[in-house]
Length: 540
Image (cartoon, rainbow, N blue to C red; front, side, top):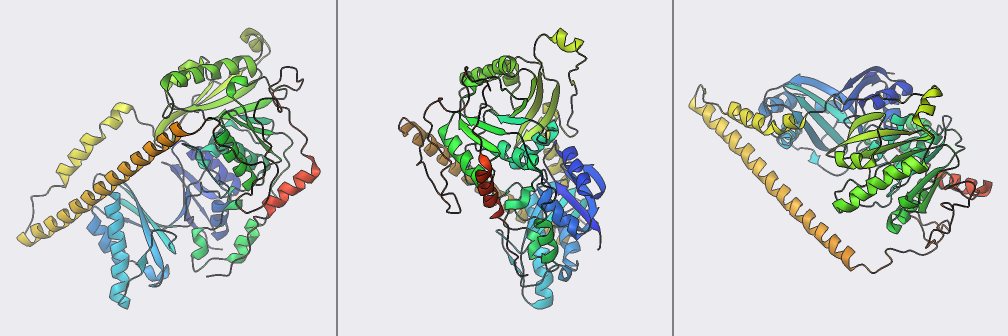
């Protein structure tokens, strides 16, 4: 089978985690870049990468490398490219652009010129052009520009791979599934002990932890990939990869997710049911203030609030509570916490042994490890133990002062873009037409962006108003409720207080007692997961 180059995109800070995943998957020629990892493989590897990688945003297949210094040069080179090898006039398509260059001022304008090149190519040859379709196109092209190096690629994933397919609802500011999986893989945890997320929100970290512990592919619940619409799609090969569960393993420990908000608890339970993981993941209504020492060895990985939606005083009190509970109620274990503000970490009051810079969306965060030894530190050292004091710097992280200088560089680039060395009047007129066309395009995009910001602001104000008017008691739901596939489930027991399982001082097992799920319940939940097994689709 033919081998070819591929690129796996990821978040800044997760490149090494993704490279390790690709190595375990059997990829060749792995090279780490900025928010990407390149590799080579055949068609089966492309299918496996989309289906199995936990920290990849999308998998690209480069089809052309070239150099260009402006959008017109890109247009001329792509207009003469052999598009017939990849699509026909009846296909729909879309173009996405990423630009890191002083020569190109607007990524959407680059995408616009690529679209023009494809449309004009087919119009000149067949008298009509393929249609542009932003949502679910037959083919999605991606152009990446670094200075004057341009790479045109086919997107084999379609929707971002973080959209696993199990998430039914979300709470405010949900953690991205790719970041959650990367955070867990960084710790080295693969199911060797209990897993706890005391502020689980919509349940992303517990669900991703369960998939890792059982070594279940993250693409198991996904409905489709972009490569399924390609002319050379091999349905039989992909079905073989999809239905192969030989690498899955048993998980003998437990995963616990807690949250003090009933709405978050109910949403997390719905997401866990959708993933068919109710045997492994237990979601409970608990406040972190009531946390007690677990009887079994455990690891905490959590994403507490950063203060974007909390009162500053409440935020500082929360982080102070985190530090106190870790110190007195989590001895002998380790905890990993991601946060945005330095003052939040300071309130924890503990010294981290590992610091990893990460980005949560646009927020530059730090992911810190705290090793909670029991007894005195001198006893800990005498026993031959050592704290892991590794600090893992992020290669591409820039100082704040350097990032603030971006506007000055952009202004310099604008001056450089101005020309006064035209050889003829016609060249000047043509240049001014193109420049005016570009400026109008930028102006239209700015208007659209302002309208979108205004709409978001209005929506947030309405949401805040709704929360203020909400009656005491919060969100409630019935004891039985159909999930998104219409099945009845009686797993959600009403618990209005803290008299349920765990968090009792007289309980010998500590804070994480759970009832035995039993073989019948295990079979039922496995049946739920297997019901996701996709049916073979005829080649379109």
